[in-house]
Length: 112
Length: 113
Image 1: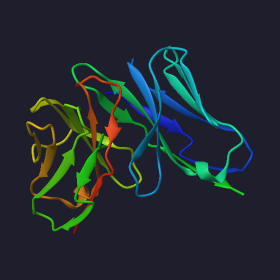
Image 2 (image 1 turned 180 degrees about the vertical axis):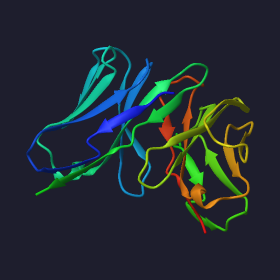
Image 3 (image 1 turned 45 degrees about the vertical axis):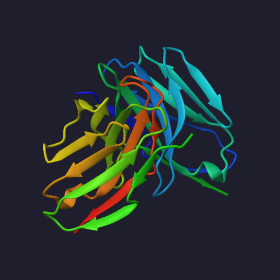
């Protein structure tokens, strides 16, 4: 059974600081996704990582994938309050259907 | 091009009742996947419908069932509701059953009392 673990589960950081969220998964996967979710809202797609060594950046967020270590990271640079949200990684076991297995989420709180 | 829509936005049901949730896929998409997200947890895959057939199912009991219509919209039906069914239900549409581009709808918040 595929397991996806994120850490930390909760992160409180000051504006302007840098931090990294880690996502470990237990078996070989085809793709890895990062999503953002605001309270009571749906999922907003941030990144899709398709191959080993993939790195994607958007604004203050950068995601990377190491398929050999079964590890993805989401790095936050110079955090701002607007980044406060819950971040999920999800792993895809495609087969005949794309089925995402999500991590437990990391709740990020950026304080002034 | 319209995005993924879901209805209703919220609803409250009593334990033992039945509920139907609806999802309209993004224009041109032929695949709909359903997820359940309990409070404080990550979403869990329920099942996927591709060209009107169930095409993959997660670890959910048979009282969770679905349909996909010729226009590719979809329904999720839950019978004999239990308190633990209270959750945000999300649908995602894509073009093709294995596409990595999935677009999530706004969700339906179901409360079972």
